[in-house]
Length: 180
Image (spheres, helix red, strand yellow):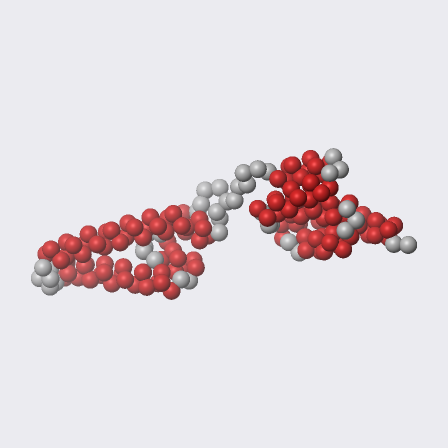
């Protein structure tokens, strides 16, 4: 999905994007410094042209243009991080490998792989559900129950509520069977 144009507009004024999006005080100072420089140069160029020597005004415009370009390019480059949209694409899909190990009954290998996946993508509800299943299969009922309770609290787990309920029911049954 292409980023929206509206946040990119914030990049056109030095310091505006980090000040507006993140509330950085130094970005506000950058915005203020640029505004003072730009307005002073406008006054020196159009209202009181004899206010300062021509070389100072021309040098000021060069400084202003450089300031603006560097700041705009920096903001454009950093904007995805500021918006929190920087995609993290794992090099190896540990989730698919974990599923394969799980289906073969290799619980500990599957657990290691799904734990790696959750380290890379902590919000992955599918991987958390698989981890709960692995914990149930290895008779770690308390950890499986905790994992399922935490999973239910996630918004991203909404499509998986039926599977979460099923996993909780299986956990209840196995817990009752193991208790004398």
